[in-house]
Every structure is written in C-alpha cells, then in structure tokens.
Image 1 (cartoon, rainbow, N blue to C red):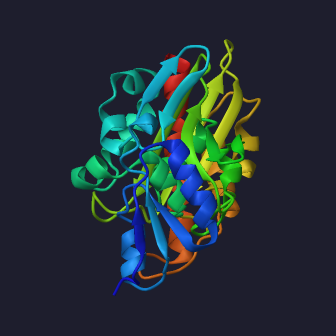
Image 2 (image 1 turned 180 degrees about the vertical axis):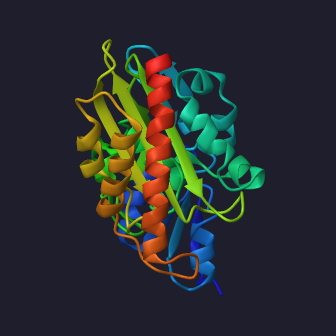
Length: 290
C-alpha cells in the first residue's frame, strides 16, 4: 500500500523549484513515475509530498546545432527521442538504444530526466550518454549548475543532486569527426532490462590510430562504470581484433558485478568481455569508414 501523500503539480519550472525548496526533505519528484511508483507501492519509499514535473512543456524539447551539440529537456519522452530525425542523423546510437528500451508503452510515457534521476544501474540511457561525454544541467531555487553525467551517479539509486535540485536538461557535445558509437545489452526478453550492457565510443585520426575511447558498462556495478583499463589499451594504437579482445578482458576486470537470479557475477564478466570487443569493433568500423 502506498503511504498517503500530497500531490503537487507545478505549472512552471519556477513554481516547481519553489515547491521543492519548501518541501525538500519530505518529498520526491516524479517525471513519468513508472519506476518510482513501483517502489512506493512496495513500501520502500514513503513521502509526504510528490511533485509531478511531467506536464512542464518548457522542459520538453530537443535542440541541436553543430557548435553546442544536443540538448534534451528533462520531460522529453523516450519515444520522442527515438523518433527524432536530428538525433538519428547525428547520434544514431541514441536512436538504436531507445528502440530497445523497455516497451513502446513505457517509451511513450517515460522521460529522459526521470530515467537518469532514478539512477537504476540497469538503465539504458546512462551508459550511452556517458560514452558520448554528456552532462546534466541541474536546477534549484538558488540557481543552476552543470555536471558530467559520469560524476552524477554516486550509488545504486543515488545521485549527486541536492535535495532541492531537479534535472533540467541533458547536454551532449558534438560528435568529433571520424567517431563511432555502439551499444548492446544482453537480456532474455527484448523488452527487459539488460543483464549487463556495454556502450563504446571511439575516435580515429587520419592515419587510422585511435585517439580517444570511452567504454561504459551498465548493470556491472551499483553505478555505470567507465572501463578505463580497457580504454587505455585502445588509445594511441591502430585497433586490431587482438587489442579489442584485450580491452574486453580489461573491461571485465574493471566491472564489479553481483550474482542474482538473472546471472552470476562470473557470467556477467564473461558477457562484458564479449560485448566490449563487439561494441568496440562496431564503433571502430563506423569511425574508420565514416
């Protein structure tokens, strides 16, 4: 049974931030609610106030230009992102990720801000966005600040947001020339969360040397994990199958998976090893042929 609460529906971001400042220690923010309501119904979360951001159209947008890159308003739904032509053209990995996120029903209602703020280690968007170098813009009544999405996550279902802050925007920098990105999760049902997932973004120079690499693991620990040991193996070299396999081995070592009803920790490490090699190869093929 859900604990009794007062439902607040602000008409603007300014009003939402004022409500949050007033009730910061006794409220939760909802922006879709498909995850939060479940844990509330299970009795794991009980609040006195629930602030619903879903109707804030001023945070429902997709903006892009070649200089600043992509900006996604927090209340933009997964389905809108999935169907965006500008995203498909400039960040096709985001389109591919969204197409595999849960079901159409979930994507029609769930929002990008709500997904990231919920901080589920098995969420799909965070590993991809971190591999693309994304940041989040946070707002409170005191003002706004921007932080790297990689630094945003502190623990399972926990973030670096203060109690009086909300996610306002996701910012993704322009994609460098000769770059490629790939993402894949391993799951038993196509609409389910991944047992593990790997996102990879690599950049090549004109001579075919890898100048930058980001490998991000999903559901391989309590937060998304940068597999920096794997990245170091790739940077400064012309990539071969052998190097990609070594990066996979290193990424598996960087992981901190648990054993549960879905898979053992050892099996998750094996999947990370395989998926890392596969995603780096796909991303490298894009970078060198694009």
